[in-house]
Length: 82
Image 1 (spheres, rainbow, N blue to C red):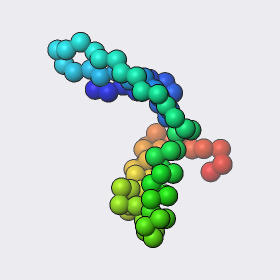
Image 2: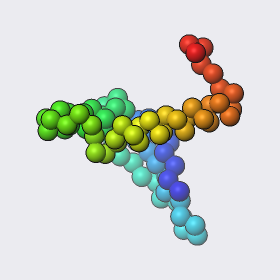
Image 3: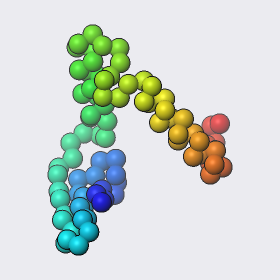
């Protein structure tokens, strides 16, 4: 299991746990604001004339959103703006 330490959206510390072995602590400096990977991919797509990423196609994004919405419905989670 990989545990990313708080805050997960820009964590620089993580712990790797493998059954029967001592935990391994890892550190990697965080650069940016949490959206660097997305921004780099958008720039790559724009430069190559693509309207959709091969790393995260629209269909996959929509499927993830539908899954998250299903969880929210099951949990009864509603946001104030809804």
